[in-house]
Length: 429
Image 1: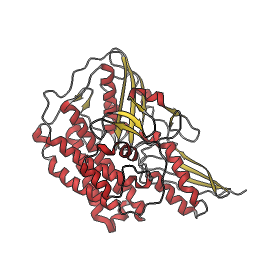
Image 2: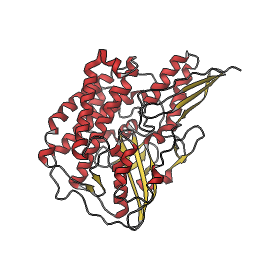
Image 3: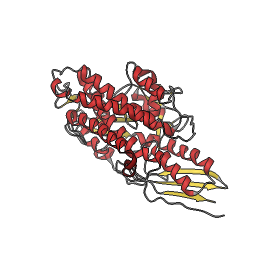
Image 4: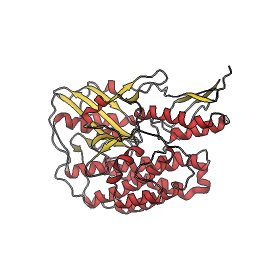
């Protein structure tokens, strides 16, 4: 018996650090383990004993790319526990803030992190030599998203203006309107981006995913909704732990999330799109058709097209929200702490971000549980890797390495929100 090992010390263009062990025996893939070896960050532990007022600013530090996701899920959990519902223009402002995060996060991934895979470049800098206009548009898109975060959140990274009940300060109509022209230009660039990525050469792979996403009766779900799947799940977010569970696996410091009755499931753009296609405006549905997407997409490599499509949608939705905005009388809804349990769930760029907290009577946090998107996707990533590697198991190691790296980047995984990722080992026997 012989063993062959391939090592990629670092895979760039994803957030976090980890490793992949791919085992091939007799030309067959026997296992694919995505190992996340970063040490635990203990957010759930050090939130205990802190005030609910501090919660959104602390959890925002979990991620520098999608801090709004953690803030929005956390404040919803506080409001749920204290019996408060944020509606009207305050809700609209939260959705607008989230649109800004979708725009900047998706643009970063599509152009700077993922597109080089399809065009044969090691990074976006090299890609810019021949595709400079696309890279400039990608940066302009990210800038447009950041402009929303800066105005509504107080700053682009780790916003500080979000609080339970609403915001510390809300903008005037006059302050919001100047974003309109930049967002109109961003929308046009996002449409061009969809058309561009749709021309890529995609590997032929269809996966029978269980899609899980939020669904709202009136809109493409971002900030609230029920949790549903394309099989038989249709639950309130408070019932998450009845359907899903997290398990520790020996090869990873990240927990694996599974549907208790079945196993792996997929969250993120492909799931949102498949479960909410009918909630997209006609212009975005038409653009999806032009890009070759049906109502459901099961090819993980085409996730880059769906992310670009969601970027165009977020620009259009932001423009709609700004056009209908009227400054609310108060920046926040008053709330009184009470003992209880609260749940929050929103659609981060990478998928559902679920939170549960227990509070003491004075609003102090007794217990915290946070389930981020990438831990939910990790089992699916491993299944994808096995499916991708199986038909090319006898190909040269470089071919396997490239396609496995590309498969992982399909998910835009946020492992710890830094910028290094993979050590790849292929064991042949």
